[in-house]
Image 1 (cartoon, rainbow, N blue to C red):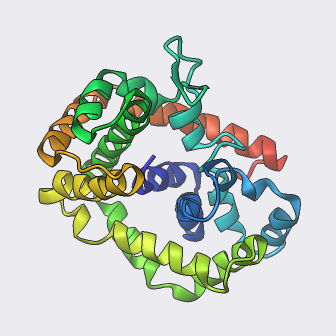
Image 2: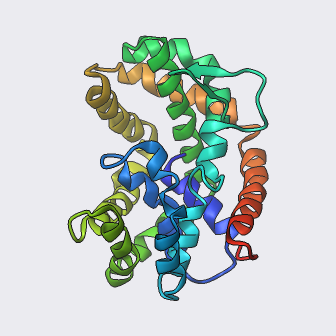
Image 3: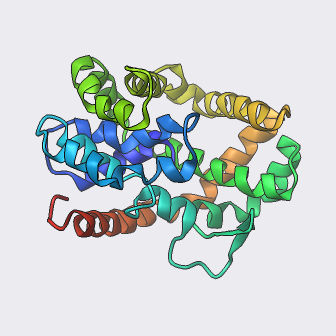
Length: 264
């Protein structure tokens, strides 16, 4: 899912004024250019890293936020990408079964996405699920506009962000400050003009067109992309809230089981 959707779920999971868990809930997406998707979505289970966070009260909640994001323990991206309710309609991509909510809901969009972005079926299946994720982000922004302001306020707390991300630089042997810069950049993008409500569709498709160009070398039809995004929003309007409510409780149970205590 996209960042503000992760943040929305994290807020539902935590009953605390501590803000660093919101940063943790989005951080794995900062690693996409450095490590594999699988690594980014489960690296935080490594015992030495876990111990480093849990023994430091200042950054412990950032670690708990990390746990809500990925696939181990099962977080939002597990249910969004990998598997949700063991769907009967299994979408195959690169030999793996993709059964997450975003893949299930995007099945009617695949052919249109293939045409819009100049993709083969495998690429169309992959990128169609991103349209559902973007639609979920738009709905989150429309229904919870205060989230953007909260994130903007957190961005001012540079010392906290540096403390939270320092152990990740050490763990991956990144240059000092890399994780901090990546997270700061992500937060800046969350609160820039791309989240102005009157241009949200155009801005998200502009950014997505860059992704298509970078990953495939193709130019997408932006007007068709906006139309597909509007259709994706229609496809999820009736059940997105039910999905998020359901998986929030699943994530709570999964994380508490992993931690062997009731933190969430």
